[in-house]
Image 1 (cartoon, rainbow, N blue to C red):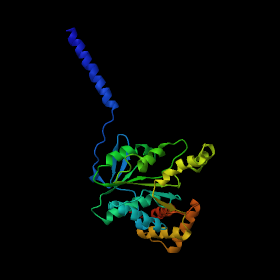
Image 2 (tube, rainbow, N blue to C red):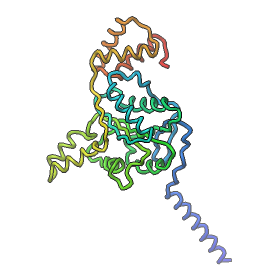
Image 3 (cartoon, rainbow, N blue to C red):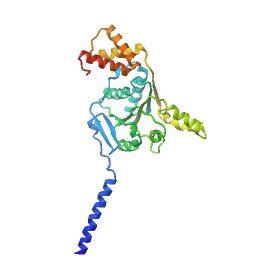
Image 4 (tube, rainbow, N blue to C red):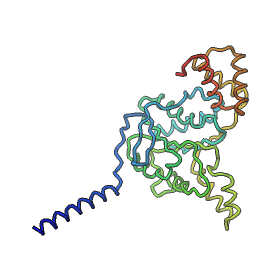
Length: 290
């Protein structure tokens, strides 16, 4: 009887141990339902892709004052979708000039050109960059092509996750999967703050090599697309384009004066400011932006 009790106690302890081990070992990532959507958001824990049925984006025809970089990104994306060589792209420059909007609009435009296109858009948040290898492993063998998109990518002092991104983009032993391309937006051309680069230059034993280590991340992007502040005429063209697209009827002189006053109160002119004015105008006119 005593032996049976000891055996039962041992089995109970083993069951508890097995349960603890199963909790400690992360569950394997489940296969995404690629038919659910064209766009997804990466959730690193537990390693899922959240389907986005309706992407927050504007039509590519509404992105005024960026026609040159728009055409470059479209061509690069089209080549990638067709299975041809293409470059990772860094869209950098002035705030509110349509960097992230262009990435999302280009994805939609390419899929619209070809109904059979298997191009998917996956957004990864800046703070999840270190989980990129996990995401790559999940999609490497999938029968689709993927744009991995990171908005507002930048790195601060003592942030070493940029090294993970460098390895994934080009430097790792596996390299970037053939069916993956990486698009990022940033206000910084080299993704790192100037004081971080200057600090490396002033404290390193070999300043040139230290700075080279920091700025080499941006070299992993073969396509650099610069976005600059727009002129008053460009700003007004954006406003007119939005107003026509959404059917907002207002006398030209009134819209011009209101839009300029709006930009003055915001202290800048950009696509974002133009759209904010249009939102205000549509609200005053009692029209929905659809």
